[in-house]
Length: 236
Image 1 (tube, one colour):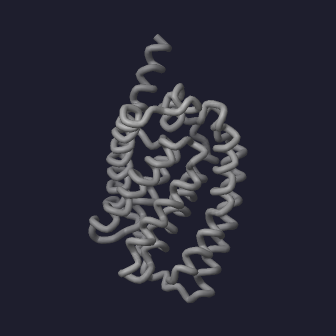
Image 2 (cartoon, one colour):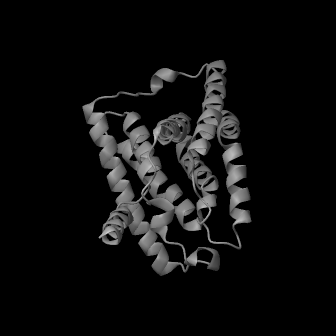
């Protein structure tokens, strides 16, 4: 893979998402970031269709470029499932720590200061078929780019493309606010890279699964537990 290939694939796969994220972020600049973020079933189906088309285009491009798909190891087994759940839990806890540190070190701007992070990222979701299917596709879609494509460059260039990939992760998550965008890029993205390079044997599936679980349940654990306790207290 060359830098040009990665750039073309970035345009194919993420240009729409980056543009939409920027528009939403600017639109919410004078409001509470996160207050209008609600993913409905219809939105999930729409996003599923769009991503399926873009993924097909990306795969066609890779085939035209004679990309060696065999370098991707995607193995679904019990060990990979356990690893995926473990990665999800570990990164979710790391994200909780990040949000806590952010709130102490960097004061939230007026547009974000009153936002309960648990409501933006770990609120009890409405789990239905559209969410499960979209989360499954999105987990594959994003990590096949960040771990499968951005690391398929020359060894001496990988560190540059890792930084590039972190920037792209940030760019299409700005609609969730700066705290979430930075956290997803640095904590989630950085953790995925470190774990992918560390865990043996290499397997992309655990990261697809971990990402999909994050899409379904949110990127935090402590605030999710807190929301469950709050729900029980309210019910009682």
